[in-house]
Every structure is written in structure tokens, then in C-alpha cells.
Length: 271
Image 1: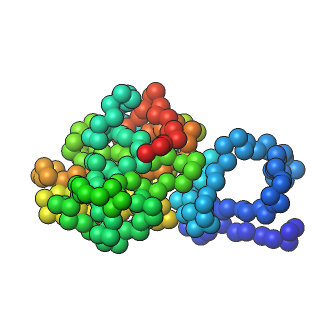
Image 2 (image 1 turned 90 degrees about the vertical axis):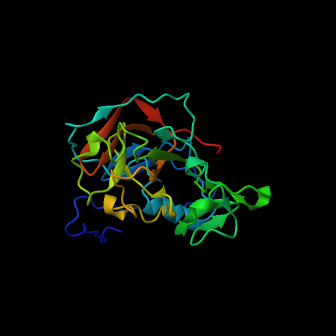
């Protein structure tokens, strides 16, 4: 409508809006017109969602769009350069591209606390768990060992504890981060994607947070916090990016902790 007006949000550097177009099932859109400018649409790999709820989750988490929030200029003064060994598929590799639960966790269906499960995959939730119950061995139909990830997106897991001395949150490269800032991955197009959850474990408690519709807004969202005086803490940050993205940076706020000069491509994941 020519009379429609959408204002920006007060005090926000970037205001994001999503527009939905209702088309006949036989239609094949080719172009988008914006103020007389024609933009060609690439629908070679469209994202398909089984339910409207999953579609809405992807919109809220900004992982549906190939043009998301642009990353502001970053401080690279302490950043380390890391070349990923793609042959290292161990669960303790600094970065893993997998839909499996972190650190080879295997949970028991029906004993997930506040976690929501569908088809033995975690859909969403935030729950405290018993660290002694993270290696369930039993009937396969009761094993929950993966995340539910919409088609067209890939899961990226980044170890952030002392097991990652190069660019974890306790590393020298992270010494100047603002704990009130959020962790992001930045792709080759300069688009940044927030962490949508994390796994944590120590000798007494474990926690799994997977909230695509409620990304982390600061390092202080991590509960409990990491401490350099402890050696029993395990922390893995969880991200979801569009398939085909090429990861180039890990940052907290504007502080770049790690750069990946060769890029890390997010591929379609079977598991």
C-alpha cells in the first residue's frame, strides 16, 4: 500500500523487518522490485519448513535470511588466525559442524527437564541436567542425541572453555571482551549471527540451552560463568547459519577473537 509507513525502532542501531508474500502454489517468483529497482531472486535452494512455527523461529533467529544484520567494524588487535583442520572430526575440535549434541551427549527421552523434543531431537528449551546422565546407553528409541535444525541451515558448535586456548573465552585473544556484549560468528559477506544457545558441564551441574527464537544477548547470559581458576568447566556455544555461508570471524560484540582466513563453509548436515 502506498499509504503504509514503517518507522525504525528507537535507540536501535539496526532495525530488521520481514515481509511475507502470499503466492499461488504454482507461482515461481523471479524478481523483487524495491523503489523501481529490480533484484533477481535466487531460489535454487529454497528453505522449506515443515511447520509455520519452525519458519517463525528461523525468522526470529535471523538464520532464514541470506541478508541478515551487518557486522559493525571490529577491533582485530588481539585476534588470532586459525586454519581449521577439516579432517579433525573429534568432539573436542575447536569448531564442529554437526547437528549432534555437543561433547557426544546422549540424553534419555522423557528425562529432559525443560527441553522440548521432537523425533528424538531437541527443538528448543533451557534446562539444568544431571552431569551423570549425559551418556545414556539404552534402547535406541529413547536416545536423544541431536538438535532439530531446519532445512537450509547448519549447526556450528564452538568450544569456548579452556580446551580451546587459542580463541576460547578464557584465551588471551578474549581478554578485552565486554561481558555485556553478545558472541557472534561473521560470514564472508560481513553478516553476523548470534549464538542461539550453549551446553555447559562441570562436576556438579550441566545445562543445555537451545533457544533459536531467543539468542544470547551477552556473555553474562552464560550460567554459570567460566572461571580461569577452574579446570572442570566445559562450554560449547551453539550457532545456526544458512547452508553455503563461509565463516570468517568469531567475535564478542566488536572485539574479534579469531579470524578464519580460509573460511569455514557451512554445509548441509545429515547429523
